[in-house]
Length: 226
Ligand SMILES: C[S@@+](CC[C@H](N)C(=O)[O-])C[C@H]1O[C@@H](n2cnc3c(N)ncnc32)[C@H](O)[C@@H]1O
Image 1 (cartoon, rainbow, N blue to C red):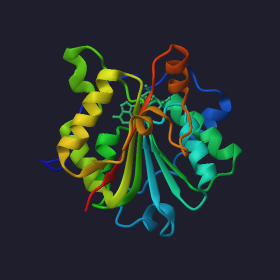
Image 2: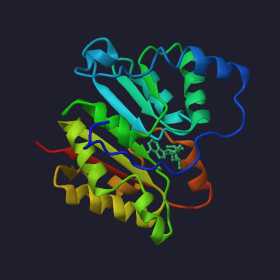
Image 3: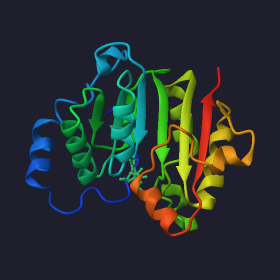
């Protein structure tokens, strides 16, 4: 491993209950076929052509990833998720809907981003990342200064980043870290722009739970500046 490679510690669950036989088959057979190549130079290395590339980090149960792939057949959706059962759900969605525009990686986005060239992605989604609410655990949060700089590096100038959360102190934390980086402008003009789900948003499982519990969700959209 090169000396400058950043290898963060991964917190949270790597797997849950045993996979169903169909899920286990898909993990064995389909996942290796729709993964990312070890070396990536161009979008074509991933999509097979020059389609725009969108990335969802921590897709959980894959509701958003699969719905975006269905709605945007001209885009290639990359999903990164360390939780095996989430990856298995995404694989079922890919097979059921015969999607040819999804690439999946089971792993830590902070490591996988390092294999991507500069200015490579058109869009990134981070939806309801683990909040790590205790102050002494805040350093486990996905959104940290170095990670935001890495997001800025892999996004094209003019590319989009969406962050959503139901945890008020993570909302403020993410906004501050993303704007402090200096490579993003926040697109909101009025409160409804961040309080209301954007038209192209697809609610996730975690979001459903948050709303049921009465926690307001916030949607922060940013553009990668030139
Ligand atoms: C609270 S869940 C939200 C899942 C989904 N986005 C949703 O809204 O339902 C956070 C997800 O982030 C994933 N995650 C945590 N650390 C990650 C990392 N370093 N890279 C990619 N995903 C990560 C977790 O495994 C988990 O599935």
